[in-house]
Amino acid sequence: MKEIVAVDIGGTHARFAIATVDAGRVTALGDALTLKCAEHASLQLAWEAFGRQVGRALPRAAGIAVACPVQGDILKLTNNPWMIRPAQLGAQLGVDEHVLVNDFGAIGYAVAQVDATHLRHLCGPDRDLPANGVTTIVGPGTGLGSAYVVRRDGRCLVCETEGGHVDFAPLDSVDDRILQRLRQRYRRVSAERIVSGPGLVNLYETIAELEGQPTRIHDDKELWTLGLEGRDPMASAAVERFCLALGGVAGDLALAQGANGVVIAGGVGLRLADHLPRSGFAERFVAKGRFESMMAGLPVKLITHPQPGLLGAAAAFAERFH
Figure 1 (cartoon, one colour):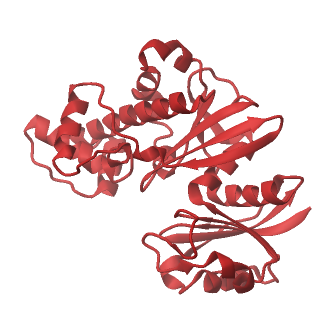
Figure 2 (spheres, helix red, strand yellow):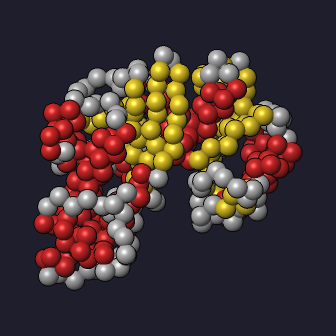
Figure 3 (cartoon, one colour):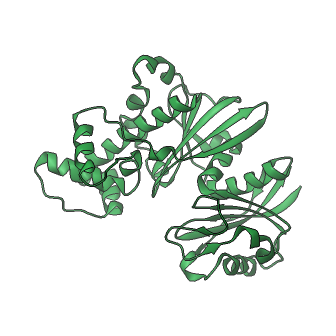
C-alpha cells in the first residue's frame, strides 16, 4: 500500500488530494483541495501551498492529470499561466515516482476503476459495463473530450483520442441549418463546435434565426441555466438539440471503436444528468441505420464521481507502478 498525491490541473483550477494505491488500484481518495491557478505562479508553488494546507510532509509520489496533450519538452495549458516541464517535475515537486497523463486520459482511468454506484444508467440495457471489451468515453465540457478503455482479464489499456474533432454529422433539417450556418464561420465544422459548453451558443443562434427572433443571450453559462430551468423557450430548444447531437456523436464514436459500453463524462454531461434520460439522446444514439439493434444493446452510463480527474490521476499511477 502506497500514499501518493493526486493532482488534476485544468485551465482555471488545480485540485489536489492524498490517495492510497495498492495492487494497481486506488483504495482511498482523500478530501480534495481546489486552488485557483491564477493565484499561484507555478505548479510547484501550488503544490507547496497544498502541503501547507495538509500540514504534513507530502508523499514522494504523484499522479498528475493536465488539460493539454502530454508531449514535448514544455506543456502549455489553455487559460492557465503555468508551463510544465515534464523532465523537471520530479526535482521540483520532490517526488521519486510520478505519472503525467492528459486530463481525459485520467477520466478513462477513472472509468476503469470507479465503483458501479458512480455510474448512473442513461439508456440501453440496465446492466454493468462489460468486464471485457471496449468502453467508449465521451465528455462535453469546455471542449469535447474522448477516450476509450480496453479491458482484458482484469487489466485495462486507456487510449486518449481526439474523437471530439470528428465532422459534425447532420441527421435532420435543423441539423442541416446548423451545419450551413457554422460553415460560414468555420471551414470545417467539428462535433466540438456543437457538443461542448460554448457550443450551446451556436445552437441557440441557429434556432433564433429559424424562428425569426433576435438573439438576446450570448453567454453560454446563462444559456445553460435558462435552458435547463425551462425559463427561455429558445434556450430550452437549444439544450434539447444539444442532447440530440451528443447522442449522435457518442453513438458514432462507439460504432467506430467497436464498443460494448459507453460512458458520458465531462462537466456538461454531469449537468445534464437528469435531462438526458428525458431527451432525444437515446434515440439519436441508436440511429445508426443497419446497426440500430446492435447499438440498442449497449449500456450507456454517466459517471457521477465527484472528482473523476483526481481519481483517474491516482489510478493512472496505480496502473503504471503496480
